[in-house]
Length: 92
Image (cartoon, rainbow, N blue to C red; front, side, top):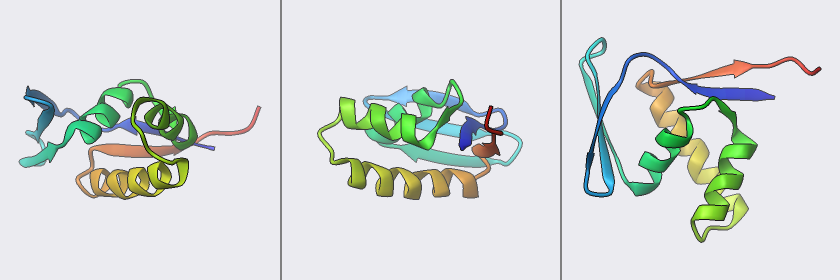
């Protein structure tokens, strides 16, 4: 299993239902829509992809397969900006 966590020091400000994020270290800005902002909030506590998608399915009217595909694409984008990291965990 892999745990997804926030990476680095990102400043964030809500603008309506969206979130504007800035990384002073990377001199980078990211704008997140409502769902992206919710994912960022959920990542305040490191979590697995399965748990993240399950929460999104509960909160938004979305099919599990769609949640999985779109969340993976979103996380790939955050990874490109060095906003998150994937940490493998060992089975107990």
